[in-house]
Length: 85
Image 1: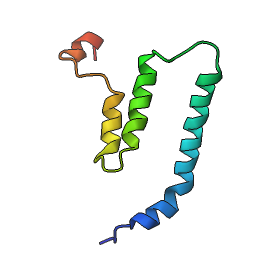
Image 2: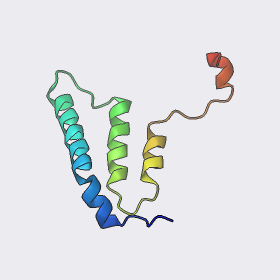
Image 3: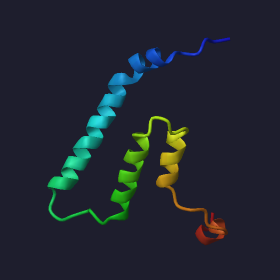
């Protein structure tokens, strides 16, 4: 039976990868802001903002699932027939 890894061990293991992902996200948001035009009213930007807000909630359980739901389409009955899958 394996021993579960502790939170401090996980942080040590994953810190640089998480840091890189946050920097990449910050760079994307900077590019959106500097580019010509505006994406302020775009529903995709609202989803990004909602996802970031959710990530700030330290006590939010199942953050990965909740973020996935933010970016998912609602279930559509009969979708298999619609897409011929």
